[in-house]
Length: 272
Image (tube, rainbow, N blue to C red; front, side, top):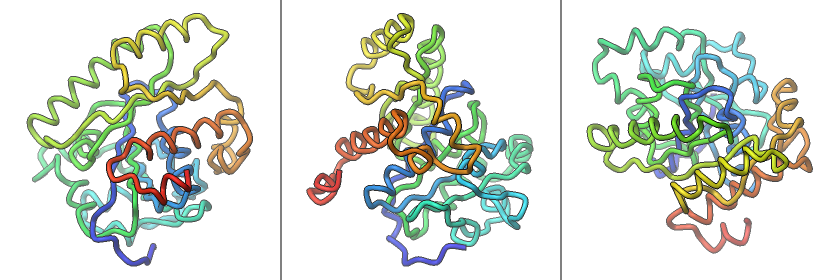
């Protein structure tokens, strides 16, 4: 249980989403959250994926927890009663649960089914940022994340069908903007698992930048063994091996995101 003074609900809420699995979504959520903490921000990582990889990747032992994100969504348990401190200073986790795997069915006929997470995060919380790790699908859990968030960051693997899946996700964001959350924006696209030796990676990167321009972050995440190893130790790559290429890329990505944020303060700029 986290006990800190509230920030009057001023936290920035960012959903990390891609309906395709295996694109580095959870790796991005974990390491972006850690990088933000490393430059002085307080962060809550919401693990909304029933697989719970973000929780275990941060060393959270889910089997020992009484409550989870499921209890927040369905039983109204306050976020601060469920959030647990991660090994990373200033980082807390709202852990996932296997019970979330049935949430799709339970939410179908639930009252205010799209608004559950937004309501849970609407109070005063002691965080500068809330990062939501979405499931690898466009279901009601992802919809809850989109309704609660101000923006979406899309990790995109440089592969042949990347643009096809991305267009589907963009249309979903547009529908959410129209019907549920007019303030939602696609904040940016981060290219992951980039291999400069691979001609296809370069071709896909050129296509994505050609279609989306400044929406694509300049920082790219390279294919990196240390990024893959880190979760098995319950650590973000930035903690596991800060000097590896993947960890350094996520630190640069966090700085780029902060520079693009409205109200980016001189103090934050100096820290970055």
